[in-house]
Length: 182
Image (cartoon, rainbow, N blue to C red; front, side, top):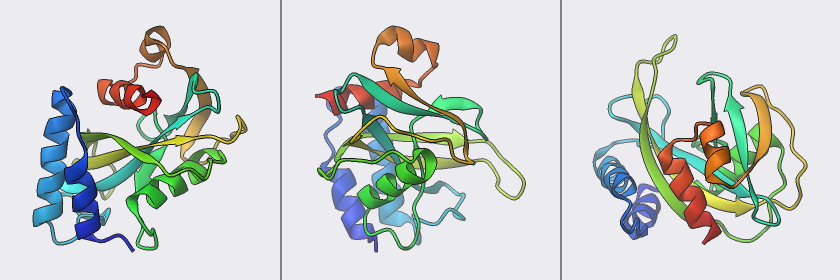
């Protein structure tokens, strides 16, 4: 089970370097972890909750896995909500990749490569809230993927500025992909 203490240690140890957006997101995530009663529940809307996302690199590190998110109608990295049974935030990110894309990930440990706090629009019983996203890097074992109910499409995107613009990827994703490649 994920503990607030383990998540706080992980978030506090992240080194965003000169990335001011990641630094600000790190501050907000650490604050949420320190002061929220249950930062991992998807039912906490003020100020939001912790989520886990993945940069999945192709075996040759030339492509990154993207999903066209059904609800948000945009290309994003696979990821989502933490579940009570997840052993760690890394395990949560790994589970989300499997659920959303079917990609088989290598057994090597993931590395925390980004943090991004971003708004989620209101829907049905959910008001506007924020996802406090920790972004992990994984390597895929192969290129086999499938589309889930949460996504309209799953695609390997060549890692290049031109392709990133084509998919309108947000800057925090672009920078996390760069850190994942080293």
